Amino acid sequence: MMFLGGGTVMDRFAENTKEKDRENKIDVFDNSTLKVIMFACIVIFLAVLLTGGISYSVAKNAIITKLKAKDLKYIAQSITAKIDGRIQRAVETSRVLSEDPNVIRWLEDAEKDEMLGKHVMKKITDIARNYDYSNSFIVSSVTNHYWAEDGKLIDTMSADDEDDTWFFDTIASKQPISIVIDSNNERGDTFVFVNALMGDVNNPIAVTGVGLNLKDISEEVKGYKFGENSNMWLIDNKGDIYISEDVEQIRQNITSYIPEKIEKRLFSNNSNLAMNLEVLEYKNNNGQVYDLVYQPITATDWKLVLQVPRSESISIVNSIMINTGIACFITLLLVIVMFYMISHKIADPYKRTLLINRELEKKVDERTRELNEKNTKLVDSIEYAKMIQESILPPVEELAKLFKEYFILWKPKDIVGGDFYYTRRLDKGYIAAVGDCTGHGVPGALMTMTVNSILNHIVDEICNDNPAVILKELNRLLKQALRGRNSIRALDDGLDGMILYISEHGEMLFAGAKASLYYTDKSGVHFVKGNNKGIGYEKTTEEYEFECVNIEFDDESVFYITTDGFLDQNGDGNQYSFGRKRFEVIISECMNLNLGQQKDIFEKKLQSYMGSELQRDDITVLVFKPYTPKARSTYAED
Image (tube, rainbow, N blue to C red; front, side, top):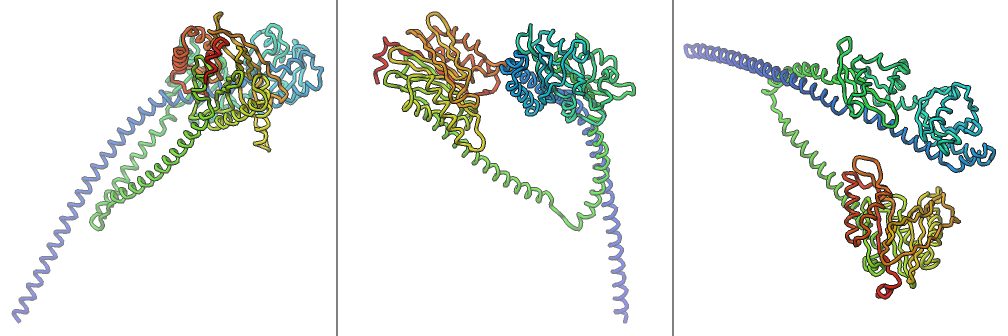
């Protein structure tokens, strides 16, 4: 009994001891865990708070710097470029309309030709309908009739009518093109009108042009609005507002919305803003900070002003403070949950992330490899197309037999192009030609193949000694071929080019389709203009006759035939093309050099003018010195 009783006491003592130890261990573990959690929470809280504060400061400064240095300027430049583009297009449209011979003939006849009048009315109606203009018009100074885009006579201009003074002022200005903002009572709206004088500016027969509705431009400007409380204005040189999202601001002066010091800065003749885009910063009477960017519109004397409250432009930064507080709270909550869960289940999200990332990288690699394969196949196909296109060009051996000296610049804009040069040796002479087909790249290259095939057919079967007849037949056959390819809609494709025929007796004949010939002899540089019609186009009828010109040349004569790619290439930092005059200057400067030296000069002049600009079109220049009858024995060698 004593043993049993003693055992019972000992068992109870052991159990009590274990219970106390267990309780003590739990107490120690709980206190330590709590301390670790609290310490970790404080450290993480301070780290998040510090990181958020630094992020807020850095982000705010970065956003403000980027806003002033790039964003506002970019927005202003984008809008002004869009407005400039629309106005420039309107200027070109007005100029083309003012030079239309049918319109001029109809007006000079005092609008008596009804058939011609219907054609004119259709033209101005089509301009307004098809080219996104609010108005198109012709106002005759012979009859003072005002014809609108719907083909109707809406007014007869009178010097006594105040609303008609714009017409007489435009004529008196003697400016070929003028741009005005006009509130037109006959049309019941306000427009930007591009007016063009038709005929002699000193005695014009009419004022014609197009109109852009300010509401249309205003709708486009709204798309660039920076924020709810920002303002975007289009003003004239007096500060009057013509475009604004707030209609109540229109026709008011901008001085009502900006401080006096900013007003002086905007309209000061000494301000750098007249030349350089600049962002201004100021505070209003309530202490609110505003950023203001100012940009002149080059096509007119208008100016674009964009006013943005700083609070809107950096509103995203304010969200950083809120997100920082939320992040602190969520972080603390997650730390507590993490320490609670870590003793029950250990997860490895990092490993899962690596696996997911590895899978994504694998998919990206597969997609990249597929794209590279497709791109390689595409480039290989185009490279093969280039080989095919080059196969139709005359080989250097053939050119060396035809010409005493020669060089060629053949530079497609893409791997293949729409330019080509062509020679054909005949029994009693040879043919040399260049052509510029519609488009460039693969479509242009396909056109060159078609034209080359037709040329060979004409030379073999129809005519080979009259360039004018060859051009006429090429025009006829090309129009038939293009219409045959598309039975639903005729393609208005074609080419510009020229053909020279040089006989073994020293006779040279030239014919050009929207292409001209340059050549030199002992007396200097000469220019022979081709016809104004292209080949294969809808406006060139099948019966159109091309003019053939006889060219006399001597032993020193050099001929320069080129497509418009060289002449139309724009230069670095401007939109001006190389042009005919510069081309003639190069010829005159190097006419006494051999053709190898001339080639180097032509290439260097072109590259220097282009600078960093990309090539805008295919370029082909064929320069050669022909054999004269005295050198026929050399030409006859095979």
